[in-house]
Image 1 (cartoon, one colour):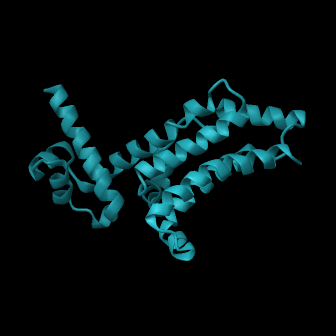
Image 2 (cartoon, helix red, strand yellow):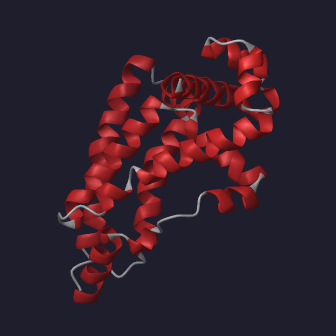
Image 3 (cartoon, one colour):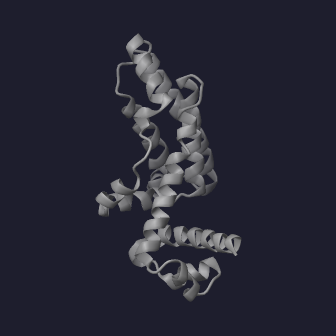
Length: 202
């Protein structure tokens, strides 16, 4: 029974995430989530009493899973130069699997900032080995003197913005879907090259 319940909850979470990402909290309907999960609405309400509660739990789980997945890379016992390409690839791969997740997170941060901050507390970026390595390099003069958070924000923004702005980029550059994958693959190489060159050559 426990395994069946776990499977049902997983189905609900996946369906809810899909619907919430497409339609947001206001546009989502519990019946639509139940249909996508392959269960009836009564069973959905058995697990989650309200849409707001389901949204909150789905958001927290999705964001924490995504955030936590970057920490093992940041704490790997390898040089910081090798971590940047790995982080870029990680973010790009995650965005390709869940292209609606960035807007999902951004909307929650914008409209419910207090709830967002209270729900995503955990291991801080500045406590990672990646940050320590950057600070050590700066202190030794081998890395451009810049705050490490600027580097992390650059990695995140450079990888996530194209996903959010995909329609605009495609329209402005006349990129077709068949060429989009090539564009993203190129960025996976360009972003680390630019950042590492910027940090080491000054």
